[in-house]
Image 1 (cartoon, rainbow, N blue to C red):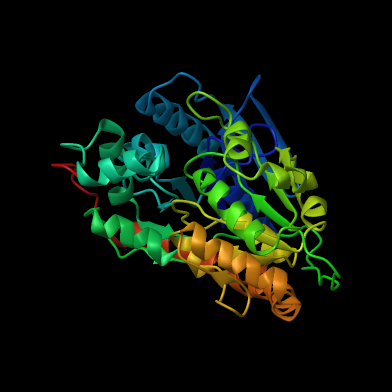
Image 2: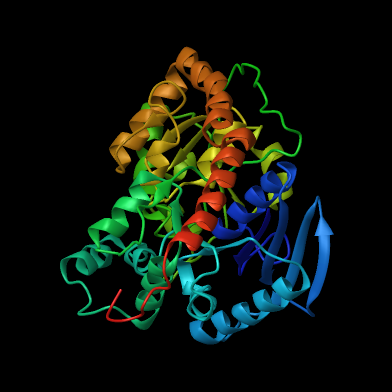
Length: 402
């Protein structure tokens, strides 16, 4: 089976965004499972085509300063060219950005999978300070925007829709998205090149890391209250914040966090900034505890990365992230508020036995939940189902709103 993945971002050349990270891991897993695997993605420079670790990578696209339909047209043209060169059995698109909609209109019988990652409207709702997010929920926009319509159309035209979590499917159902078949939820993949999930050795002391860019969606506005509550209980607690500072309206997040936390504790707080992906594992191994507080996550690769390295994690992120671990077995799941997240961190700092239990159980949980074998079975099954559905369904008629 020849599977083609389409993604604007694909590491390492143009970033490790959620969709690019997903395709990176899944393409390696599918190639290792014996599938011919191709990735069609953006390039920063001249178009190029190369093979890396058994995956053909075609950097033919450019999404800079281009509207969604024009970009989707470029995607469709590139797929048609690749298919003429070498037969493709099934194509997978993300719903975000409606990258596949032109190809789907041109070739309604061609087997297509659309993976839900978090559509534009859902992302828009999560950005900004708390009052603005509340206002968006209280006063929704009067109608769907053009990109919302296109994303819904792409999902409706797909022969199979998959999602990384039950929560992600529920968000679409609540907002009355239409599907030709019920979506299938299975976790995003996590592939370790060495194939082994490390067992951590017990540490005599604990340090705490926050692995997320500093912005509203990832919960940066909760950090001062979380840090202050932990320091109130454990004044010597050490924190490191890893992730790019996206900046506030008038200042940086670093400046704002320092202005709203006790000055006497600032020497116990390190702002690491962005860390290259290839150094994430060695960086995480310096810590024992991690915590998260995103407005929502359809999955959460940062949580998975920390758990796979044996960090004891406090997960306050809303959404699919709550499905990754088992509470008090491999993770502490908590409501998304400073009190709950700080309480979980204090529990782990004070209780070395619980910390070590989570540290030992978390890597195995990740292996079973989203490791190579599990995802390979889910992926191959999904793509075969898409091929069968494409053969069974009549060509759809495009009419009305999606």
